[in-house]
Length: 159
Image (tube, rainbow, N blue to C red):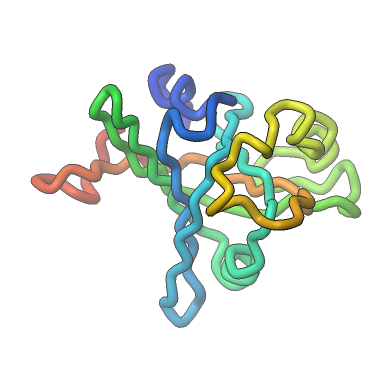
């Protein structure tokens, strides 16, 4: 699914506190992990990219269940979305031609493998910043559904 420009613009590289983004994954036994994602970008208008800075539980869940949900809240504009789809982890050491849902590992790691060259991790507030920041790869979600997060119609497909 191609993401609307409004969502792409909200997810493009920005200041970490401009938009609130969470990635939710779930293990096969139903235990969810929700992790804040202060850094996001978009590839080909349908893939949401997030650096793996310290995502151990997320990666365990993705090994068991390759579905994720990215929830976005744009507090200034009062907008919110939930994007669900296949989700995976592209890490250093994979062959360049490794394919996840039409994305090649080499293409992703060449441009986003060193996220700190695009954004300063020091912009993270000290209370959420890991003591040691070492990017281990890139988490990729291919948007398949856009769901409402409004109380009246939560979970309803809106795109």
